[in-house]
Image (cartoon, rainbow, N blue to C red; front, side, top):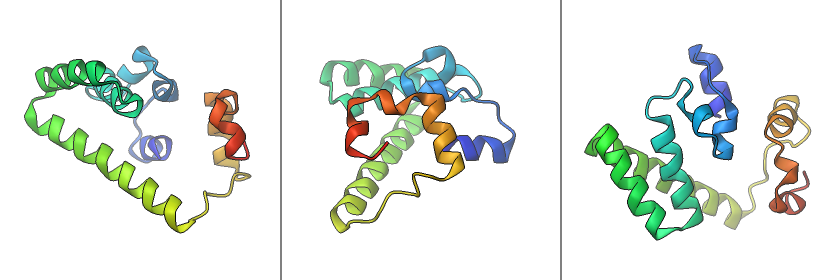
Length: 118
């Protein structure tokens, strides 16, 4: 979604940001490194890292940015859990765009890939 959104708006991004690359996160995304660290700490359920990343995002972007980021993260968690629980299939794994993104990010190297048919 990030890739298509960036193409639509003409924003240059580095998809390696989703792999924890701070330099990639800084490219084309306001507060990219702070948002990346916040998302990473949430996904890893690391309370210490979350406290640090939340404070850094608050300092860099203010309370409205922090609230928006937390809301977006919560919404993604909700959507994934609903889709998983009712059996909504993943997008066509053979679609060209999906293959290109998975290859660029080397997603098949992650342990969870064996559970997703990658």
